[in-house]
Amino acid sequence: MESGFLPRTRFQTLLDALHRAGYRCVGPRVRDGAIVYDTLTRAEELPRGMRDRQAPGRYRLEQTGNPRFFSWANGPQALKPFVFAPQEPLWRSERNASGEIRFAEISPPAERLAIIGVRACDLAALRLQDRHFQEGVVADSHYAARRRNLILIAVHCTHPADTCFCVSTGDGPRATQDFDLALSELDDGYLVQAGSEPGRELAAQLTLTRATAAQREAAAREIEESAKSQTRRLPSRQLRDALFANLEHPRWNDVAERCLSCGNCTAVCPTCFCHSEAEEPTLAGDHSRHLRLWDSCFTQGHSYIHGLTIRADTRTRYRQWLTHKLGSWHDQYGRSGCVGCGRCIAWCPVGIDITEEAAAICGGGTHG
Amino acid sequence: MNNARPRIAVHKFASCDGCQLAFLNLGEDLLALAQAVEIVHFAEAGPVDPDAAVDIAFIEGSISTPEDAERVRRVRANSRYLVTVGACATSGGLQALRNFADAREWLAAIYAKPEYIQSLATSTPISSHVKVDLELWGCPVSGRQLLAATRSLLFAVPPWYEKDKVCLECKRHQNVCVMVAKGAPCLGPVTRAGCGALCPAFRRDCYACYGPAENPNAESLARRFEGLGLMPEAVARRFLFINGAAPAFAEAGLKRRGKPHD
Ligand code: SF4
Ligand code: SF4
Ligand code: SF4
Ligand code: SF4
Image (cartoon, rainbow over all chains, first blue to last red; front, side, top):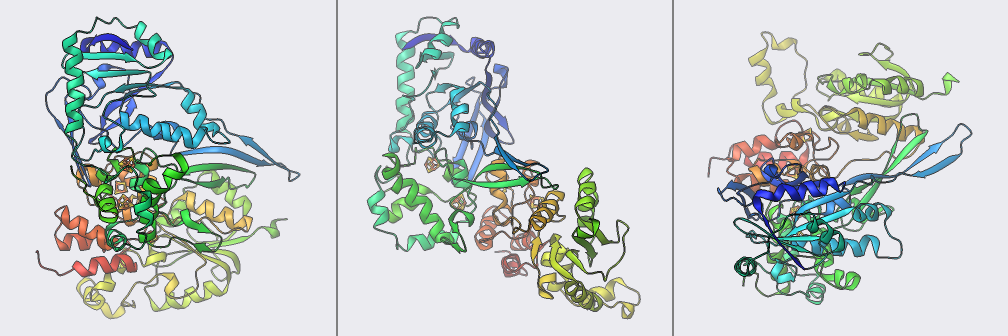
């Protein structure tokens, strides 16, 4: 599995190999005070030495002077926007002069995309999105087209944020599945490990040196320490029964007082998949595009059925989010919908912490 | 043939004219609009016939004089659908700041002969005076909203009505949240979508020009602003602004107005 060692000074050769193979590289870059995924052409564009500080409702970056490119925990985006687009047209309809209506599919762009710096929690989330979008009775063609064209370069996570709890959900910090290449970042370079045939082909194009035992040990130690440094946790990996036994718990009222019903948690959550659809007719009325947009269980439209809004208040909307994510996902997909990335905690404008709410409702501690 | 085209009117009340510009700035779509409908009254664009019977009347501006309170009733009586456009017509607008002050005192401070000014003590939305069929929020509204509403009415289907929070659009555009990453007091979580999260896209905080969204929790957001270090009066000013007279914003703002620093 392990292919060798790539010195940091030769990181560009990885990007070059991907470019040669026809991929657009997307990787971590600093934009507007956060680490986001953006087009990457040169290794110098990587966030060298950047470190994030995350807390409920708060995210800040600082420069540490460290030479590493990946010494940070995940920013607001996951892989989700690259496979399940935030807004995209699905089809168009046209009406001709005699009043006939025709429908035509709008195909998604078939761009080959290499994503660099992917973390274990996001790979676990991608697994769940794959199940939802393409492993059911009918595969979502837009999702599947984008998914097919992805190559994933993972980095084992050595710098979890205070908001991370992937150890407690069993999804990190080591990347174990669904990557093409996985990197362990050390002070002077990267241990490179292939996880697929395209990954092996890619590694073969790099000039790698043999990895030493000391490098392997250092890499393993860093991942272990990263796991130990996480202090947040969910009370259990199976909270379905506890949640559904507590549907009238007073804590739902308490969180509804604080919650803005703004949907930021669901938008940053790498596993959330709800969408709404909208029509975009031209003024002449002869053409229309049919759009799919990210939606959220925190909107009114999400629970609207002809003439009736099922979840009109924030209490029932927050309860829907938690009982689905940590409860009925078990029935739908055989596991909880939470991979412990902590995004919903950091990017909630009022800092509502899913681990705290779950513990208050289900019992059990959040720090351990 | 032309007689079959729906007739529309654009009326102006107390406002800055910015929302009418959203029509005039439509470009090519304005020509398409002029084909699809007959514009019978739109003083800023040319046609003047304020008392014509129409299918759709668009109203810009709030009610701030006794004459306007009368005039809006005539518009209503002459129109099949009445659509308010913009913050002024929909919530009372910026000029509704006087609702929270002594309007007479302001008149006396500004005009040499205030007795010549006939103005109500409040600026109120059109819906406080007559039945409104559709409210388009924004300061100003966008051309996209006007076209979408007109298209729906021409199709005789209920117009799509934005009511979600700006945060949804903000995340769809993958902006970095200015509140979480910079501590900026963003009103996006209580504000109605429709602008495409314009301000956060330019790294600044939303100031709620699209008015309150459905199910807004202004009180929790106000507490959060205090947690970010804003003094009570600064929090009050965030809410008592362009749509300050909208009840959800007025409540959170007025609660903090005049409160000493704590
Ligand atoms: S629920 Fe929160 S912590 Fe869990 S995967 Fe979603 S965003 Fe991450
Ligand atoms: S939990 Fe936070 S992010 Fe989620 S809807 Fe409520 S306020 Fe918004
Ligand atoms: S920047 Fe403002 S509108 Fe955007 S997500 Fe943050 S709070 Fe919401
Ligand atoms: S972000 Fe807020 S203030 Fe800015 S245009 Fe949109 S609604 Fe208006």
